[in-house]
Image 1 (spheres, one colour):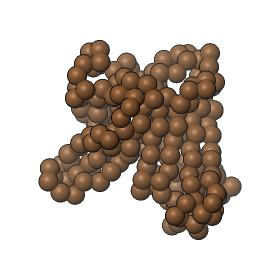
Image 2: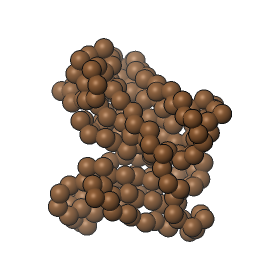
Image 3: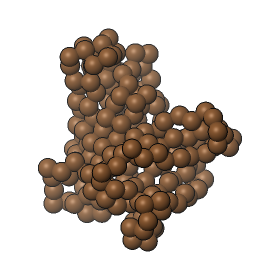
Image 4: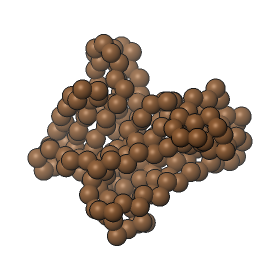
Length: 197
């Protein structure tokens, strides 16, 4: 436990060795079934680990996996995804960090935010390249149709030709509409792209 928290009074951290994994779980005791936006926040830490994976699990099924190759950005809400959860199932979010290739760093977990979300507005499942972007006063929301056999890399850049940075990698287990919300976009111009693997 550490008092270096992004939210509340404390957070959890674990030093990593090359052959170890750290895991944190958040149980989601929802009172109604429906679609939810899920975000996390962690405090800043000089030796924070990279390659942080999150799994959104309902019952025994992993519905969505999200990877942050550069680590989770600190002191801001970071969007994991939108999923439909069933109140009759056991729902949770797992965070898993491997010490492979990063011994001496720390896995850190703090707070998770769960907000009821409107149903996605994309009609049906459409063609594979169906996508939309919505603007709110403080964020941008990308919606696109995803397949279960593809990983999607969300990137943001200052121009269309250079400076792309990976925000997250999404790997859905079931096909459907995927979402990414940039809750802290840059103040100037920005471009987004979705790469498939």
